[in-house]
Image 1 (cartoon, rainbow, N blue to C red):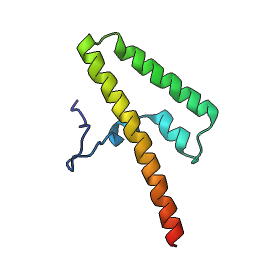
Image 2 (image 1 turned 30 degrees about the horizontal axis):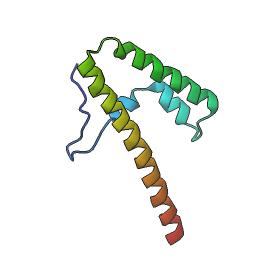
Image 3 (image 1 turned 90 degrees about the vertical axis):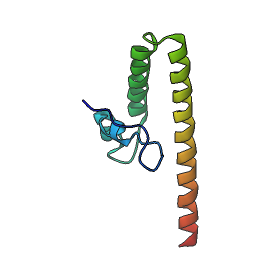
Image 4 (image 1 turned 30 degrees about the vertical axis):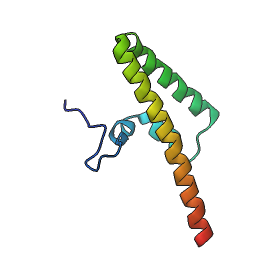
Length: 94
C-alpha cells in the first residue's frame, strides 16, 4: 500500500487523507457539534495510538515524533484561531 504524503504539492501540511479515514472523527463532527463524550472517545483513541507507537521508538525516534506531535498540535490551534479570526472579519465586512 502506497503511503499518503504528509505534505501536499504546494508544500503545505496535508493530513486530510489520514483524518478522512478516521470514521469516528467523521461521525463525531457530522452534526457540527462535538460533545464531551465524543471528546473523551477521541482522547482515548489518541492515547491508544500514542501507546501503540511510543514503546516501539528509539530515543532518537521518540524525540522526533514528540516534536512532530507538538508541531501538529501548535499548527492545529493556530490554524483554528486564524480561521476564526478570518470568519469574524468576513462577518464584519458583510
